[in-house]
Length: 147
Image 1 (cartoon, rainbow, N blue to C red):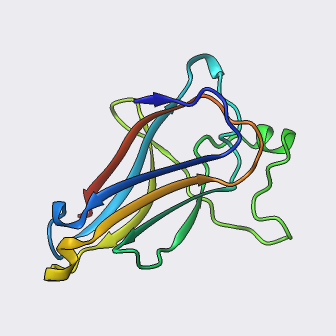
Image 2 (cartoon, one colour; image 1 turned 45 degrees about the horizontal axis):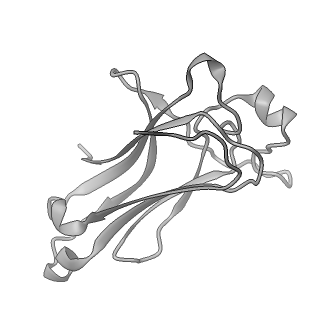
Image 3 (spheres, one colour; image 1 turned 120 degrees about the vertical axis):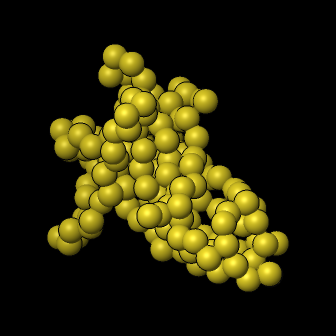
């Protein structure tokens, strides 16, 4: 577990050998986190955060996410959702039964091909703005089969 104290640029990457996943199975990757107690978080509400999941370095779909949805903070610090007049669909987090938040980062499907066993799954989270951020408590990333 790690807590973000203060930064302006944030990239989080997780890597997993494809051989660790069940062949021919669809998976979702999740960022599991919380925010600092007492509301001591900042810069986590802007919708200019992105996630992606790729297998074997092949291009992955990127998803706009927002770790801590808060319209008032986004307006106050200049965060904008979609800019230029078009709306961007922003994924929202879900509170888990164990108290942590989780954000679906993306999905992938293993094929079961022999060559795939040598490849790597990469999940990434990027906060794109250069504004101050703090108070993210990172628990980790999880890869779970979809049912």
